[in-house]
Amino acid sequence: MMNFSRAVCSTMTVMMCLMVAGCSNQPLATSAAHLPSRAPDARSKKTYQDLIVGYVQLGAESEWRTANTDSVKEAAAQLGVELRFSDAQQKQENQISAIRALIAQQVDVIGVAPLIETGWDDVFKEAQDAGIPIILVDRRADVSPSLYVTLMGSDFLEEGRNAARIMSTLTDGHANIVELQGTRGSAPANDRYAGFREVLKDYPGMKIIDSEDGNFTVAKGKEVMRAFLKAHGKNITALFAHNDDMALGAIKAIEEYGLRPGVDIQIVSVDATRGAFEAMIAGKLNATVECNPLLGPDFLELALKVVNGESIPKWIPSQESQFFASQGADQLKQILATRKY
Ligand code: GYE
Image (cartoon, rainbow, N blue to C red):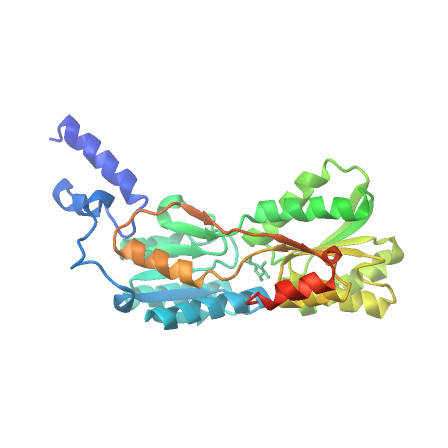
């Protein structure tokens, strides 16, 4: 029978286990080894060279995504981590099979950028049962927090709010807005959509007259913007694109229609990629809300901490900024010269 102090210790162990990867509720004597205060000593600690890490990328749909992939690959090469990388080509079933393959290979840690929020419970449980920690990189998954160690990435809700705040200034609170949404069901599309509307409630003169899925790509952004223009023509005075790639596609559609992007239609997007800076320098994009894809080094540092039993916060938010065409071409060029993506 379990006495009181042992029951309390077991409860604490379970709580700690929520923060430490690959830990099951084992008998007290062995579970104590998982507590942060009893982290493995220097001799048994793993180094980067010992690590085998899987990275289950969702695709290559945008400039942001390419920068994210490059960041993970470069960091692994620099640190000497063995990386098993897969690109799911925007299909959740490919991500799920990739995770299963990595479980079979008994890698140390799996990083996942989930395409959409739902549908991860079973496969994450399989990883947990195999003792392999999951780190969510970039996008959230709608699962119990016990199924992943940490989420590292941006506050997409705040990005949506910031886009609306910027739009209100650009349009003086009066606009007929069209919106290009990111991939349906993805965390950034859900949150940017919600955050944008939250702020717009305070601006009765700003109306969303149309909103469609542009799948985060240049091609779809252009196609949907063309359809918006066909339906609403010159009534459109503003565009909120959930990423820069869709804004760049839309800019082409607006020019082909005979209007001036950035002048006749105010445009705000998200990411702050090289393409967005170039469009701001050309006066065709008004502003972009930064979303940082350079997560590789931090991801691998976390992976190492996790295998060494260190506790880490449940969410590690990115530090981000905003950029405006009104800063002027010279300043934007200088900033661009310092950026990696
Ligand atoms: O904003 C977009 C990409 O998940 C934050 O995905 C990421 C988003 C990014 O396709 O460009």
